[in-house]
Length: 326
Image 1 (cartoon, rainbow, N blue to C red):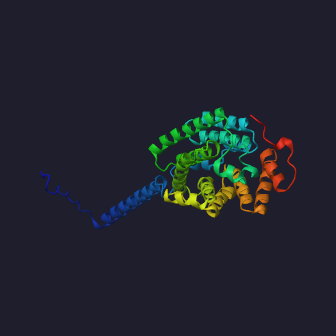
Image 2 (cartoon, rainbow, N blue to C red):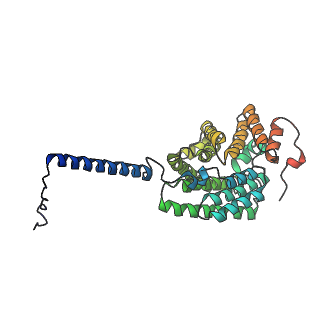
């Protein structure tokens, strides 16, 4: 009998004839090699550092989903209710995915921007409007629905983050939620302090998602637009923001938005219109013309893109291209 501190009794060795012993050793080695190969194969499948354990189709934000693509295409044609119908239908089939309510929130924000004339050269070239927001008030029902969708995206993302802190779908949804809320606070509500907080939050989440998924080029629009807007502020304003940990760089901002405009999935057209309007501010009319021409060719039914292209080409803007009042 062995005690806790003593070594266990060694098993007795069975001696075999030489030939039989060699055959047995060879058989054991073959068995061990087979088990080793099997174990390595399983580790390649299970280890996220060696191979993705979750297929890309589990992350609609990084996959071409026909229903979502159709919804965003309608959004870029300013067919907002039809776009939301597509998104809402997709959400009903995928109730735990945060990208669904993120898309719905984007539809409300984009519609309000369209109604308020935010995504126009008149707005971007007017420093008072561009840096301080709209003069009137946003549509209260549209804003309420926007915030409801943002809250849903955050809630669903938090649930996924609890299961996996590096969940790319959740990190992307949180990036977009913070970025859109920052835009709403600045442009629609003129709550600039709250906007800066959300802007920092969006930048932090963008860093996390790009560390996990460098191919998430849509995520660059959040830090890119923030860098550009902050870079447009006066030197005094940037000085104080610098001490608050918020930096701005117009050149870097345009480079980041360009990544989304060139390689983004769902937000590529949105990045293009932002980049085109920024190009007009920066006295780069040829870049603006090229981007707006591409948008009008891709979305010929869009009155917003057609109107901006007509302006940059110094053509009259037909009345039907202007947004209808609420």
